[in-house]
Amino acid sequence: MKDQAIFVPMLLNMALTAVVWFYMYAKRIPAMKKAKLSVQTYTTPAKIEEHLPEAVNYPASNLKNLFELPVLFYGLCLYLFVTANVDTTYVTAAWAFFAMRVLHSLVHSTRNIVMLRFYCYVAGALVLWFMLARALIDVVSVYF
Image (cartoon, rainbow, N blue to C red):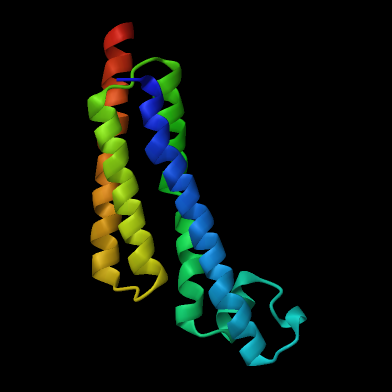
């Protein structure tokens, strides 16, 4: 397996972030126009949430989530590549993490069914913790 295989789910997760960003504005801008308030009304995220319908704000909340656990995922993927530790298990786990992030984003940005969203989040987090624990065990075994 080529070590670069770890970059495919990583880059696709970055693309997911871009898709959610565009979707957020596709929902937000028409809602702002419909509200007919001055643009200056929306000076902070709290003001946006206050003046727009809850469902319009779902993608924005999801976008914030895409800068939490995925940041660890990106760093871990880069670490695995730089240390030449990429293998089939890591790549499979990276794909599973990405799949859970896609499902989480779909649920969070649309219907926002909280328990379904939570299960997707936890499944992805557990995959990420598995990847991290495995990398830590590998590094500890080298030095101790």
